[in-house]
Amino acid sequence: MLASVVTLGCKVNEYESQSILNQLKQAGYDICEGLVKADVYVVNTCAVTNMAEHKSRQMLSRILKLNPNAKIFVCGCAVQNNPSQFLKNANVFALVGNAGKEDIVKFINKQNKVLPDLIHDKYTSTARPIKTRTRQYIKIQDGCDYFCTYCLIPYVRGRSRSRNMADIIDEVKHTNAKEIVLTGINMTDYKQNNKPALKKLIKEVDKLNVRFRISSIECMALDDEMIKILKSSKNFCPHFHISLQSACNETLKRMNRHYTIETFMQIVQNIKNNFSNATISTDIIVGFVGETEKEFKTTVSNLKKIGFSFMHIFPYSERAGTVASKMESKIDKATKKIREDKLVKLNQQLKTKFYNNNKNTTHTVLVELYENGYSCGYTENYVYTYIKGKLKNNEIVNIKLTKPYKEGMIGEIC
Image (tube, rainbow, N blue to C red; front, side, top):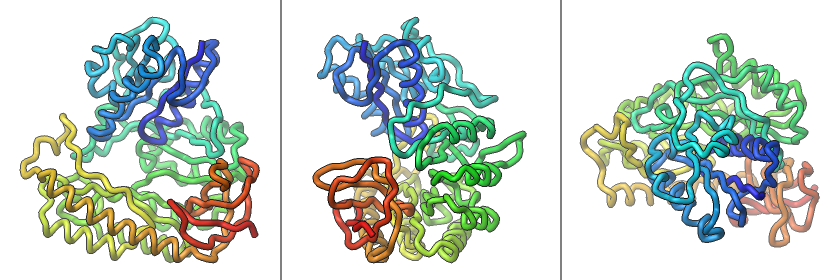
């Protein structure tokens, strides 16, 4: 029987989906990924925004167009947030929230539609993920204690809990991947024995001589000591995705973010001083509750000063049950769209400048795929690179970046 796992959302979901694939394989299923015709589907959902949750529901309809008789099992954040939205579909045979993914075959076999409670007190180990990609995600942490006013994640993922460091190191040793990405819901809060331990983990990973990245991180984790550790690393890929959300202090305060824009800018400048060609990216929420025109202009001005390599722009999406959903002074859709368009335009300008700054620089690229006559992959500083001709996947090659092309740059072997 063929089972396919369909993934929406974040890198943590990607990791967990690879674990689900392994569980299905061990249970005797033939396995695949994505929207292909199969007998059984596991849909790993997302609920970070209303649109993400809509896409999660929509995925069921797309599956049934492929196979009207499919047995569908739905798991993840959208289920945890609102299981009833999936129950009315006759092809849904079981629901699993976030607790339970580590033993999903049990729910499939029982066709269980009652969610288990979220696990709050400890990290739950899962089956090791099946390696299907050149870059391998390594999950180090789950949950979040920050409770930003706009965010649903602490309610659907539970409180912060960290994975045993020895288990992480053992998984890295056995991935056989040439590049890994350390990921978590809030990696900044990674701890061992209730003490901050992210710096120690990075030092231990660096000893394994595999190229590694860190996924989204809070600016507070990037103090002088952390920058020194990363700069001295032989294997760290210099891409810093630092969650900002707004570049105005008044807005940040309403969001319950735990830093000022001045602190954030100092940290970014310190990175630029120590990494000459690092990629520095971020997430920005536009049109948050109470965001005045003055606050928005302050955000735009500060984003120009910071000079990110690129930004992910999201219009504020109200999530029922969060503190922000109860706040007054909501921003209308038209205003949000105008502000979003301005930031999208700024983002394009920043990307163009970043690509131009990378012209004639040399890098290493991990080749991930071949399409339309180009071998493609990311440089160590996260520039998506198109190399003419067919190269072997999962090989690291030396290239020179020559010019912007599509969503990245042309690279020539050197």
